[in-house]
Image (cartoon, rainbow, N blue to C red; front, side):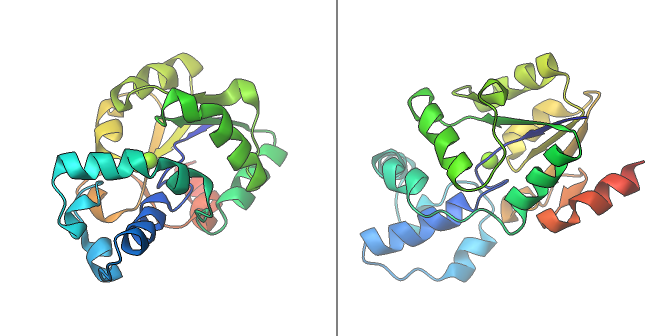
Amino acid sequence: MKFGFDIDDTLINLREHAFHLYNRKLNRDVDISLFHELDKVEIHELFGMTAEEGGKMWSGSLEEIYYTNCPPYPEAAETLQRLEKEGHEIYYITARPKEHGKRTMEWMIQNGFPVREDRFFYGMNDEDKVHIIKELELDYYFDDKPAVLETLSGRPLNVFVKNQSYNRHLNIPRINDWSELFDLLTEEK
Ligand SMILES: [Mg+2]
């Protein structure tokens, strides 16, 4: 089977990593509980920033956000390793900007994910992921973002949403923790 994965906030805990970075950089102490209640992907409002200020803060911090010690979710790398060992194909489809594609791929390898260069896609817009997913004829796809998942309804593939505070309204099969994956696949059959 062909399995496709988004990276940020699906396989790795990127927004929370950025949240802690923002607290440090801005010398703030915003409570983590507010982060866990956010109903949107962007985190700038927690720090009193406008969308424009938030966009600048995010793009100005990308180096640290992407390449420091962002933790993968528990069991994420191990689960994908096991899928690959069982003979499945693993694809990554991330909307990270083009100039960060290669380094992101290397970072994923360093963090234990099974990566093949020809199965690693990046630099597209959220709404264009659907075209790659279609061309690859994926059997399964996992993402956290409503804007992406909404483009996939009606497609002949199994879509799962990685549970996050901002996607609770989506009525799609849900994965809370990567250790659940093999049980979910069994239930699907
Ligand atoms: Mg994501």
